[in-house]
Amino acid sequence: MNNPEVVMIGLGYIGLPTAALIASNSVYVYGVDVNPKVVETINQGKVHIVEPELDYAVAKAVEGGYLNASETPVEACTYIIVVPTPFKAKNEPDTSYVEAATRGLIQLFKEGDLYIIESTSPVGTTEKMMSLIYRERPELKDKLHIAYCPERVLPGNVMYELVHNDRVIGGVNEASTQKAIAFYQKYIKGALHPTNARTAEMCKLVENSSRDVQIAFANELSLICDKADIDVWELITLANKHPRVQILQPGCGVGGHCIAVDPYFIVSDFPMESKIIGAAREINNYKSFWCVEKIENAKLQFELRYKRKPKTAIMGLAFKPNIDDLRESPAKYIAQKILQNAQNQVHFIVEPNIESYPSFKLTDYKIAVEQADIIAFLVAHDAFKTITLSDDKVVLDFCGILK
Image 1 (cartoon, one colour):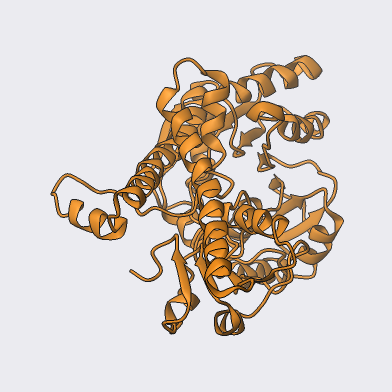
Image 2 (cartoon, one colour):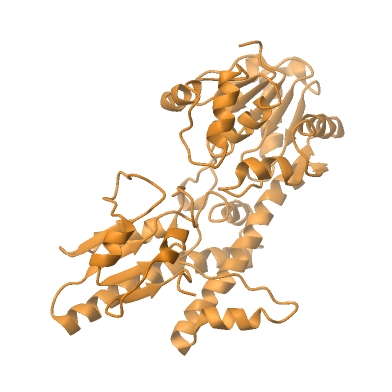
């Protein structure tokens, strides 16, 4: 491989598609990941995650010599950080992965290089990394271009949205913003909106917090309607006939690495001001507890009526329909809680988008539906919409699959 123009730190759900996109433009990309199995898989022209069109893009880029993976970075002109930002105790964001990735690059930087963070980060993270770099390399002060550019793609449509979605690009100064815009313009057809780093960081958090608040309203409605004996799905359909009302659909909680996580970045730094955002997180987390209680109550009622323990099918583990991603999934949490309370009862765990999972024995959805007495729909996978249910089944629909 020729000397790379771009080094991508982190080859996960965003880093690998982004690396493949850049490489597809005949640009040499050097991908870095701490997981040797990920590195080996990519260098074979294969992928370790499920995402439409990604396998083809990676295979073509590797075959053409434009994409290579390693566990250690090398010198380039542009460095992009796309590593996880998990949580410590008390929902405090952990930026240690971003810092570790940055430290691994410091000695490679040279005057004029572009350093971009795409990882979801607390406000001020880009400036903190800038200070770290300049402490270690004071001779480079104000000679690097440093910017923050959050991703805003939808799993299942990443390869398209990486190209066509608008992006917010915030540098630590105007020169950095313009340098980053010039870089992304080569690969992105969506509009590029300039701002500063702090605003770009907050923009990412606000986008997902807004979604979380909207979902919390729908989930809260589902709790109210359950007590009021009202069909929440019909109610929302009717309310949305209003020209200025657009209520989202309730579910069994909120999952994924973005919407279920990003609001905590705001709540952690601004606890006194983020009342609605914090309350939305509590509502959406509670909805999963509520679903567990509803399933357990249904099992108890079945046993009291039929004098035997029911067989229960838990339908779906992914955090949203038709994907294999289980990160922060409320359905996965519900399945875990139900199995903890199993008491020798038979449970069928169903997730049609993955072949296996370490914590669960998976069952084909057709077998599960046929043998189960209680069927709890947690995720509205397309495969479930083809199911024909007999009248003797107890059905708990937490995702509107029957509507």
